[in-house]
Length: 544
Image (tube, rainbow, N blue to C red; front, side, top):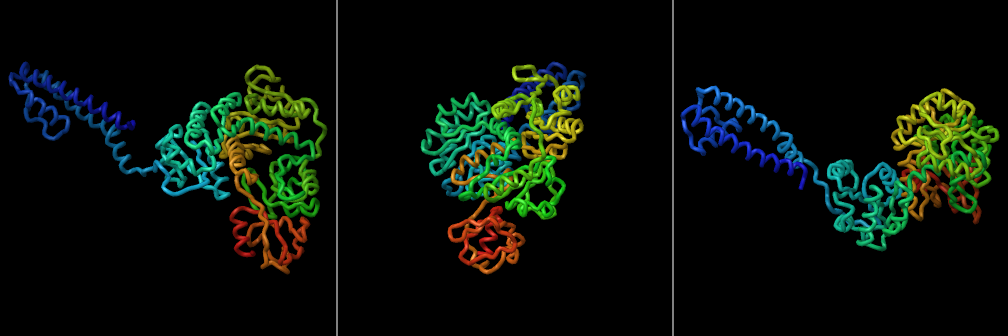
């Protein structure tokens, strides 16, 4: 039963009791104080006329002070009941009548779609990735108001309980390719059990907040169990461990010895302060820059006039030696890491994973947390100067902010940047919306928990595709372009007209990556084109 219906029922029964209570009192008062006996039905009529304001006063005037006070009280009660009725009964009733009806079952035929239970910030990132790959989805949302908001915003959503068989049947689970359970650790287990009951062959991916509970999700039947905080900790630590090596980290292989990689520009790099055109990246490394994140905003292709700074992340393509050369260009002239040069602020689940990974990589760190416990070196508030000085922020090379509260992390970033203008700040954010503020506060690199986990979910679902972009999906396609035969890359104005980059050419079985503006394309060449979905679609339309 709806909440407003329960309230209306309580109001109705209370109203009946009050009306008959006043009727009995009026019946008694007219007999005792006015000496004008009235029947019970007549007394009821007077009370209802008074409460509804449709004809009160027919027995006036009342001579006794007792009855006058009683009538005044009855008038006030009637007005009060009317005022209470508006928000409790009338307004919700009109809202329900006028509100958009959210479907309880899929209204269209879908197949190979993804069922998402229910909507979360990481679900938003997942949906963006699925949309970029053209994969259909449906959100099973138990909260009616949230389902209504999502439906009005244009999301594919049904209002159902994801723990019920009916919910999955109405989401056409038998035709789906995967189910994502992302509510809470306990509810997710129930969702997994229900999903396996409806369609045992469909993959179920469960998200856990507490990693030690993963075993119960697997026992329930989950095919894949993901821990977003563990993923975030690993990602943050990777930015430090790869910063002291030429390892490309999570480079994605597109072809034999041809890869795409994200390379952050470190504070102190020779590239900082130059525009993309002035950097000479292609001439110095041979790699192509096909996209870049500037303070969390993605551009593909980036403008030649874009200024590179510490924290800019380049999305690059090329052969492994070329990317390794570019990796060297993005790094600062770093001294050897000594004990305490990496500071981890916050020793929750994310901070603990960061500490473990750095320890395994042989990179000692100093851990700061406001609670004294094993593994914490400095106990204190991360927004207090004394705590940060004790941790050695003024002499440190890198600080990793693993704080769960974005507001606190932003304040700590400002203080740390003021204490040590040259320090590299790597920070976590709970939601993607606060990343821009973290960059403005002085962070060099920011990773959002919602973004990292959403991307990992997408990568797990899209087994045949590699998800590489935090916000915008960039893909590499292999295609012929007969219309470009005989033209140079510069003359064809591929980037200007489509926003795509020719990152390689396959000719006679060999891949050529040295594709500059003067490279002449043959009609039988196979081109490797990198760009967003819209860009590659435009390239196919105009040049193939």
